[in-house]
Image (cartoon, rainbow, N blue to C red):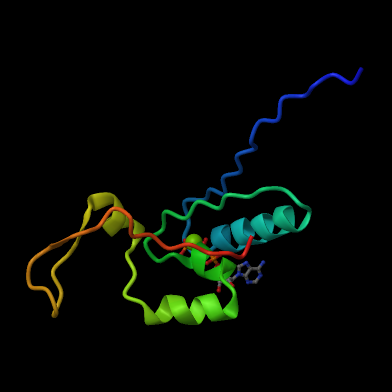
Length: 104
Ligand SMILES: Nc1ncnc2c1ncn2[C@@H]1O[C@H](COP(=O)(O)OP(=O)(O)OP(=O)(O)O)[C@@H](O)[C@H]1O
Ligand SMILES: [Mg+2]
């Protein structure tokens, strides 16, 4: 009888103190490659610029993403949006607001 192997998630972190050296590019390529091999992948993007999320969106999702007034991860974690031209005071965020992708 085959022994049951407990599957535990593999965590991959791409770390380098320098900026612009390819951390996000490597993370996106690893995520795509693992997903293409049938693995379930969760890509965690906590960069307010959301480059990783954008690189994993389809063309249509990217267009939709650019048209919406989405939240950055910083705003989501803080629970409010900073003042803007439309809202002169900080705006409380509905905690159900978040960006999703169907790429995987
Ligand atoms: N192997 C590579 N060859 C050539 N260009 C690359 C390579 N890897 C990444 N780049 C390019 O270098 C630039 C920076 O890459 P990337 O955004 O992945 O870096 P980063 O380390 O995540 O940057 P940041 O610190 O700003 O988050 C991008 O324009 C990307 O397309
Ligand atoms: Mg990056």
